[in-house]
Length: 296
Length: 266
Image: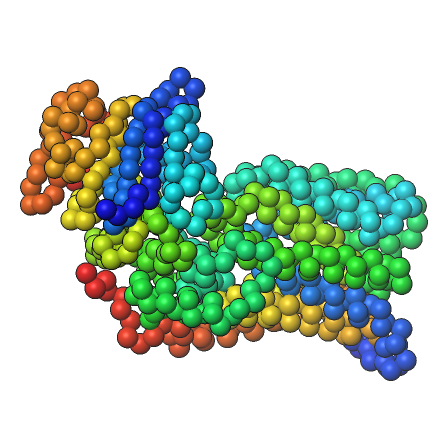
C-alpha cells in the first residue's frame, strides 16, 4: 500500500455531499452520546472512577458479545452487562482501594467471557471487531430511538440529583451529616454510569470508552474549576470529538474510533498547554490583597 | 437565661457489653463554648454522631435545637477534621460554601442571585472573600477549614459542632480558626460544641468541658475538671495536671501513645 492509498483510506472527502445525508442518524447518535459522556465524565473525575469505567466497559463488551452470539439486540446486551458490572462495583467497593482491586479482578474476567462468546459466534467478522473498536455507522432507526431515549433518561436523572451528588462526591462526611443519602446516590450514579458506558461503547467500542467518558472532562478540568464551566466544556469537547470523528470518518474505510480518540486527545493536549500557561500567569482567582496570614 | 440548644437526658450508649457512657445529663445553652475531651475510644466521636442523628442512643433522650436529634437537622452545623481536596476538584471556594446552603436539595438551583449573595455574606463572615473564586484544591488547610466553618454556618444553626477541626493545621491557622469558631458563641445566638483531644488551642474560649474516659465522665469548667484529682479519678490511675503559662499539660496518661499530637502531653 502506498502512502497515498493509506491517506485515501484515512481521509477521503470525495462524494462527501452525497454521503452526508446517509449518516444523519449516526451524527445525531454521536452528538447525543457526546452529551452523555461529557456530562457524566465530570462526576467520574470527581469520584475518581476512571478505572471503574474501564472495568464496566469490559463487562459491557461481554454482554454485547453474548447478545451477538444468541442473536439478541447488541445494545441491549451491552446495557445489561455494564449495568450489572456498575451495580456490582457500587455494592462491593465502598472504599477506593477495594474498588480498584475488585475492578482488577472482574475486568479480565469480562474480557475473557467476551472473547469466548465472539469465538463461538459464526457471523460477520465486522460485527465482532465493532464491539471492541466502535461501529456507529451501522446504527439503524430503532437503535437510534433506543439510544436517544436512554440518553434522555440518563441526563434527566443526572440533573435531578446534581446538587446532592456534587455534595456527596466532594465531601461525603459532611453531606451525610446534612442528610444527603450518600450511599443511595452512589448506587444511582453507578447505575447511570453503567448505562452511559454501554451507550458510549456503541460509538468508540469497549476499548476506547475512556476517550468519551474521561478525556473531555479531564481536559475541561485543566482549564477551569468553576463547576458550570467544567460541565459545559466537557460536553462541548465530547460532542466535538464524536461528531467531528464521524464527519472525518465518512469517506474513509476505517472505523470511527481512531478519529474520535485522536480529536479527544488533541483537545486534551491543547487544554494542558492552555492550563499550564494559565497557571504560570498566576491565574488562581485569588485577589491581590490576599489575607492569607491569619489575622489572629 | 439563654435557651438550651443541646439537651441530653439519662443518655447512655453501649456497644455490646461495652458501655461508652451512662446516665449522661447535659444541657448546653446558646452562647456557650463547650469542649468534649477525652482519649481515643472514649466515645467522643460517638457522642458527636448521636448529636448529628447518625447514631441512636442505647437509652435516654437527646434534643438539638428543641427537637430530637435527627440526620440533616438544620439546627446543627458540622465542621469535621481538615481533609485535603484533590487539586483538580471542580469546585471553587464559593461553590463549597454554596453546598452548605442547598447541597442537599434535589434538582437544579433556580434562584441564582439570592444564592450568590448569601454565599458572599458567608464568605465575608469567615474572611474568605479574597479567595472566593479560587479552586478549593489550591487552598491551604487553614483556608479550607474557614470555608467549612462558613459552610456549616449556612443554615444559621443553633449549634456549631466541630470535630477535631484544628487537627493538622499549623499554629497560626489553629488560632485563627478557633477564634473564628468562638465568635459564633460570643456574638451569635448559637453554641459551639468542640470535640477534641487537645484543649490548649481553644483554652482561652472554653466555658465548660465534658471529659470522657474509661466509661466515666465529668462536666464542669476547665478549672473544675482539668485537675490532678478529677482526671486521676476518671482514669483510675495517677495522672498529673500542670497549669503553666495558661496552658494545661497532662502527664502520665495511661495510653499516651494514642494521643497523637502529644507535644502538650509530654
